[in-house]
Image (cartoon, rainbow, N blue to C red):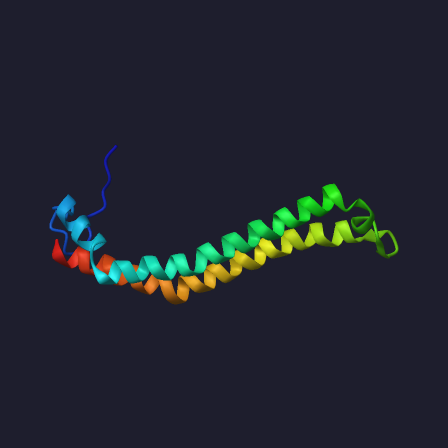
Length: 121
């Protein structure tokens, strides 16, 4: 398959050199990358632990506190249904929070690292 499209401007028909293993190692050992990794971990790990604890609480309540979970709140809506729907709401809330955190904190740092690696090529 051939195309009639010209190469992108500035490429002159050559592809940029691929970073070497040493390039990746130096980036991995940089303070900038450690800060990026720390920013990710400080957000992801606590929320992951909190969500797993919340989920296990729901499962344990469902197994061992049937009377409580069956308590009607209004109409045919009981505690189990509300907590089950709250699991979905929590999942979407965490995804939204992570997207905001990534856009504000992680993406700019990752883009700076990427730009530095591409400039070194």
